[in-house]
Length: 282
Image: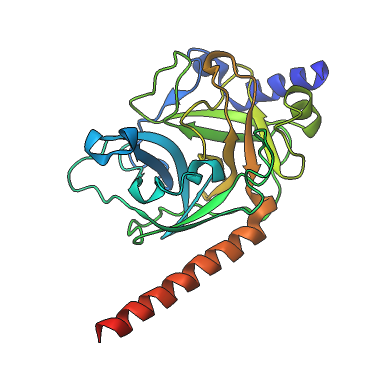
């Protein structure tokens, strides 16, 4: 365990400039214009009433022009979902400005195994949502993987969740982390981690997801093709933001077949509903 962690830190220091990253505790702010257009902010009304305003509650990723991938536990409140609004990442901030295209959730599917046990686990904590209209932005879609993520591979986490000081950031934050082995993840989080269904990540300075980061993507940017892949959906976060050791993601590759089926069902139902509405109008 200790030897593998030492190896992980050594590899991390060779992938990332620690001189830069050790100056921050959770991650670095994202200032690049147009960065991560696939990232979505799931916002809920304060106190369940839209008149009170909205706040960022969870995250998602755009995998098709009308399809959002997120964590199942972000969509567990069926009465609240129609009130949610989905903000694409226009300027690395969760604030909505006049003229911003904002989406609503038209339909959704949670994995049937989500919430089947009484404790928090990453297994089956995944959901697909159909948005009320397509996102017209070119290049806003993130691809799903076809190959597994290697151990100690550098990937990125991001979100508007709470920082190490327990305050929500005004701007999107990111961090480079490494995938750990199943053994390392089970040693620390035996109840939450599900081998074969989840991924566990960390780095030498303890960058991790926290409250508000749930549903967010774990991504790998292919340096040869400049194509970005979503390898994970954030499932288990720590409420101790300053010293969370790991972050657990649902392994997207393990659920690719279920995602395909869910997208097909949502799309077909939407087409049938649209056809029925058109017939009524005649």
